[in-house]
Image 1 (tube, helix red, strand yellow):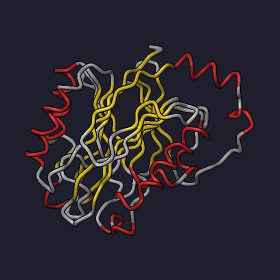
Image 2 (cartoon, helix red, strand yellow):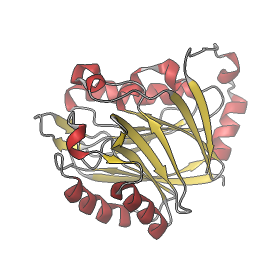
Image 3 (cartoon, one colour):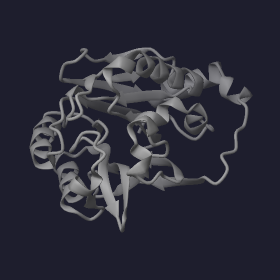
Length: 266
């Protein structure tokens, strides 16, 4: 599949109320069914909570089943992160579910210590690349964006996703880093953030974007407003650009110690 149509959903999130958010996002997702992939914010059913024990569900819980059912109903893949419990541990886990009923996960690697995330969640141990409809997709979550070695394109992905709850005071950093990741990795980048205020009083401006492999905004959201963006990505155009400007061939190699790499075919 040479083309991939992506929808971004930027909206407010009701603090620590999964049922209210589920109803809200279900309506927005159904309105976005004209896409191959719908991207939601980080912790889209709860907000960026440090009380996982109050809202977490297991991987086979009702929230994940609902997401799978919705993807099958609308005929599009959906991704975003949820608070997931596994045994006695909690994960900020991105789920990528498909209309065919397939599911893969990525656990946030870099936990935001300034918000005490590392005290409540377990960090992921795998760098994951998803193969879906001919596209190679690297999922990341919020703070991961600040770490270019983790996001480094080893000529193994075409599209990077970053789902976030990134506060408004640091919105310039968010925008610059998204563009930098697109340029340095010669890949499309989709960044989806929330808007509104969370239960801790933090404000979110959104700034969700879909960026070309040149770092050009294909979609740029309305600041502070609920917004759904849409763009069709062209794999042939990306491959042609990389052949004409093969900066990737001169890239330095990096080795991430103690990190497993995983490729998932969907």
